[in-house]
Image (spheres, rainbow, N blue to C red):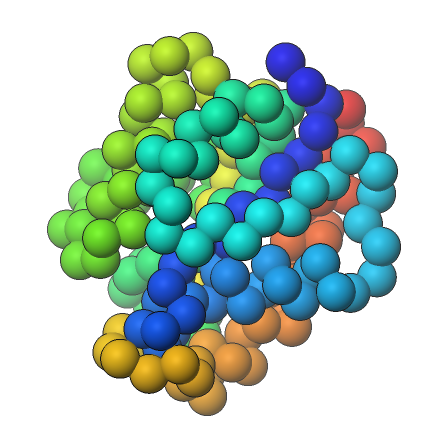
Length: 159
């Protein structure tokens, strides 16, 4: 298993807040240099095509819009245990959320799971045909980048 860290942004940028994971990953990639061995990927809505990337990474941070039942723009880091509970309770209202749950299940069945896995979940306000984010979710991008960077640095030090 690799020691590399994969930061994977998911979502559809044509569906308003659904694309926030992609926006955060793009900002991380354009921002200050991340440590060696950190790879940022715009995973969009690729679903099972991401399995190989998951299996090659030692640690995976997924950034995605998720209905976590909080105010729009709220950010939560879901660790493996919390993520399992969220996925089990999920009503899977978006196509890529179902894809994420299935992708993680497949990775576990194939023993491809990374050493560290977490989802940086951002509560959407609106999922509708629009290329721009809602104001609360747009405002969450900078703090999400800070939280993602802190998680990356913690995992990098532990490697």
